Image 1 (tube, rainbow, N blue to C red):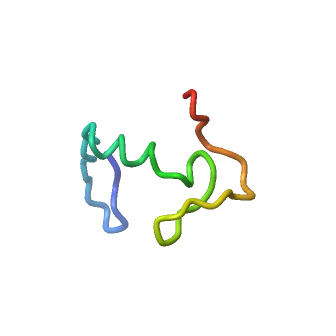
Image 2 (tube, helix red, strand yellow):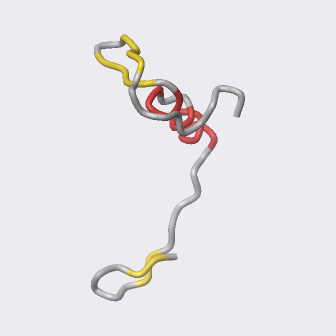
Image 3 (cartoon, rainbow, N blue to C red):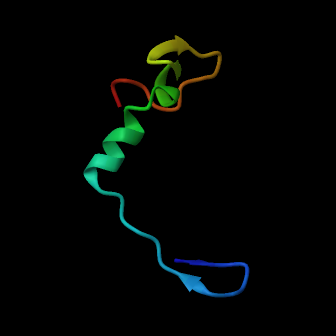
Length: 52
């Protein structure tokens, strides 16, 4: 639960399996960036390893 700037309490929503799968398969989390359907290596450290 969080409180908005106006002081109103708002409950969060659960993440379903499909949304979680899309988030974890996003290439920015483990190797880089995708542009026009092609994945390019990033210069940043990985957030999630493939094994995780």
